[in-house]
Image (spheres, rainbow, N blue to C red):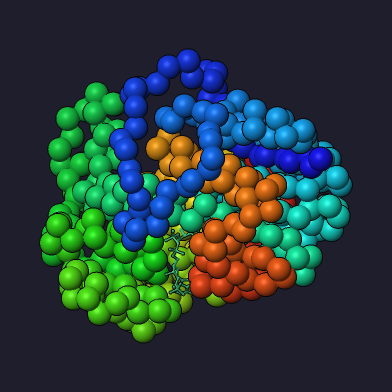
Length: 401
Ligand code: NDP
């Protein structure tokens, strides 16, 4: 029987919810490209429940224990004394969400000789050293598409929030003010602006589709070009390089995976090529941006605003400069963990586990690494290598709290 360690974020500070704001979730048949939603044989949770925190357990305990497996759920993931690190020597499967990532560095993988499967309950497996997984023939799988639309909605919200100066205006209300001039001195319309996405995969394309009704000019940069019919339908302008796109855009949104090709892509040199007063929204991965270069660009006015929900490492230390830099609209990593998204990725995790234990193939679109190489979605969207360097700093969050 297997030992499975599942790393989840902590419950709400006022306790696991006893009731919810809404009674149900809308029914969705399939994703926009026709891919089916997760298809486990059964689920043991109520759709719409908080599944991503420790008490929610992704709704997996009943299923896994009925098969005789040991199921350990913890939020303790960083540093040598963490539950994750203590359990690694005889763990076969690690499940983790990108919001509260269980960093599986080469050193940790070396401490886990029985590890065979790393499941990302979400999208984005950069918290696993993919090169080490390839070398050790560990399967890495994620629940492709489960929260892509959730993130696309968040990106649109953040673009509008930055450009229209929403958060500072809200704060004036809370402070008891009526300071219209203070609110509007940095407020613009998005209509007529040029917006570009770095990567036009599931999220990037969904963002462009959602921004079209705002009468913005739509741009994208991606390694592979979209079908001509899609370009025509949305009036998209493709750019062969990120620099080419960044210099003409008023708003740039980053929607590429983090892998060696995209790590620190937005550095001082690229930011210097952007229009003065551009906005940058990054819900992809914190490390795609050079942390201090972003702060400098906001301080100098090169960027008029930066928003996103991804940081490096996660959780971000209390003194992370993105918490206090000017004109930001950061949240913790939440865009892909709405209650709607959790239902899908909990079901997708269950589907992957059922396939694993029943000896059935995991869907190709869920695979990132398999059989000692990049596979499925991973072969299309990632490059081999490691993007986990520096993740040990995540331990500083709990030390400081
Ligand atoms: P997709 O796989 O559908 O899209 C990724 C796109 O990135 C592909 O079109 C791929 O291009 C492109 N890409 C990869 N490398 C490069 C590169 N070097 N330059 C330009 N384009 C590149 O994934 P999603 O759209 O669903 O998700 C994208 C990322 O968003 C995830 O990997 C994850 O990091 C992040 N994410 C964040 C979430 C959150 O909660 N904040 C939740 C979900 C995802 P091609 O395949 O054509 O080579």
